Length: 277
Ligand code: ADP
Image 1 (cartoon, rainbow, N blue to C red):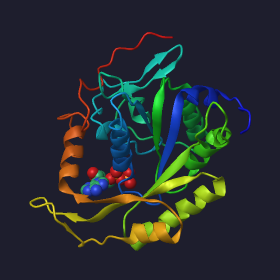
Image 2: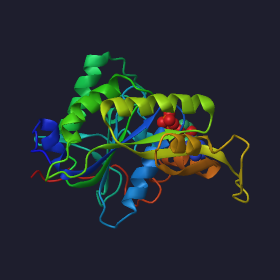
Image 3: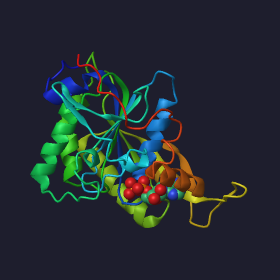
């Protein structure tokens, strides 16, 4: 193992045990929904697990809405030790950071060129005070754009395992079974390989249709393409999620603030700013 190359980002992320980057070749395949489900599943692995969700979709941030934090009162606090993420639960086990929290009006659009996006991503990586985290799940925009190049460039010093950080960042690919999505997922895979980012595996989302009455899964919209792709490319197949109207209903209800994100209890987005260390 090599000795640690210290940067403001590696120092900030020293308290994060695992970094998981969620990628998709195409928009609309359920990448952000999968990032939220992944964060919630990781949270459920242990009653003490702590997870962060970082939204790097700068032009289309959807995580605040998906975790029920779309309320304008859910804002990021600036402390002298950095930005305090917005917590979904009172136990402060799931923290979220998104550009959505920094916009005056949640409906505002961000029209930035590459260098400005790069500066924001650097700030997100170096200035958010996550505290001790078991997992940091990073949701990225679709495709392989400026945001991905910035993210992986900034995280590059963490790509070499060190005694204090034996695990290195890795990626999960989200696709649907359709050929166009699979073709674009191949581009994401090739991108990860070029940049030396290990891929944990692939999730096939919207695979089949789950009947809302009996739960039976039919193949109306196709399934299996993601699993085939994983096999052909030596990737782990992490599983498939059908098109599920219950999931849509839950995400909609969370976005309207009617329920907190599934599996988490506590008052949403009303955390006290913790005392600084
Ligand atoms: P992306 O981040 O890839 O653009 P989203 O996660 O925003 O995609 O999902 C796009 C839409 O599809 C959202 O409205 C979401 O609720 C819905 N969706 C995602 N996964 C599923 C699923 N398995 N079943 C039904 N709807 C889904």
